[in-house]
Amino acid sequence: MAKQVNCDCGFMVRTQSDDELVRHVQLHARDIHQMEVPREKALEMAKPVEATVTI
Ligand SMILES: [Zn+2]
Image 1 (spheres, rainbow, N blue to C red):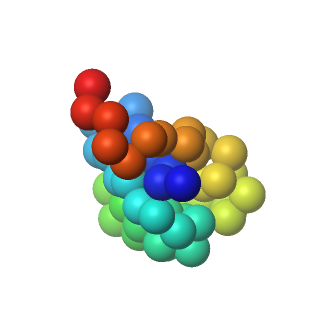
Image 2 (cartoon, rainbow, N blue to C red; image 1 turned 90 degrees about the horizontal axis):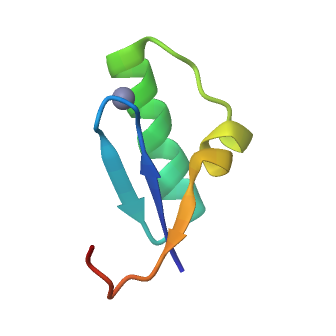
């Protein structure tokens, strides 16, 4: 199951693996918001998405 995180700034990341997702969220938060996001927080922000559905 793919997961997606939408940041308040409009940034969006969608990946197939939790590890990838967490890594991207942490990189983004650090680069753009100067924030450290713990793994649990990143996963908390994530929503499962159907890979085939486009909205
Ligand atoms: Zn952001």
